[in-house]
Image 1 (cartoon, rainbow over the protein chains, first blue to last red):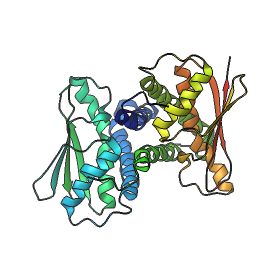
Image 2: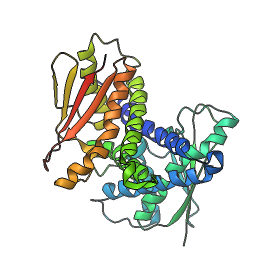
Image 3: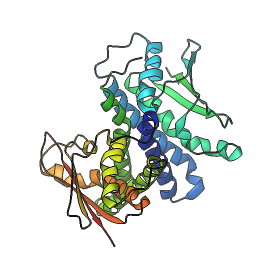
Length: 168
Length: 168
């Protein structure tokens, strides 16, 4: 009756593996091959958006209203991120003018990508879903935003930096 | 820093919502409409198959070999099911001749389907992924099988019955 994995790892594995399969599915089922790349990114982003909406709805059902935007971002960094990735965002910075930078030092949805140039080429398709996820969550909380993400080459730890710009 | 959901519910929500989105995606991106239903089921089953393979690989990495088929089925009912659905299979029966019936009394991937005829019509697309999941897991453990599932109308609890027939 015991799990053979550390609890945290087992918790996130189904979601992570399904996420990878969704990417595979969308990329292999596209008819036009590589020229379709931009559209596939959009599909993944849209799917993330809807998952983010559904998830934040459940997570905030019994939550008191947020007092401001920063309060919302903190909720994303803590509760929301923990629910999806079983860890919190490691670092949140803001210019207090609508730009927020979220950093995850061990972002797991990058999968088994190895370091190097190919890693950076492949990164966007592994980040699109998560950008949508954050945008969808924020959207449901009344915050319209543009969410982009980037990674840098660091084999040991894979930081994810989310630039979140509020649009007015 | 506290989660606003019971831990179990929060754990499964991302996977569950993503699963729903995958179904939506596959069904809305199909070009031929309703005639495509069979093919969509196959797509979902295949995706589940690959997720099952990936997951069982991780789960059994440090596990001693299984002593027989029943031992494998017990692992699916306990460890594997808990990893994906945060609960064990409630009931496992077998005729000791290659047929296994797994019953989950509160299967969560049926989503917000309400009871009634429409419920039964819609059920197959909510079960296909999970059938593939089990088939993929068993396949990686060297057990070729046919996996089918059915539900009955019971609003309060939604039993999932998996018929697993070993193919020789």
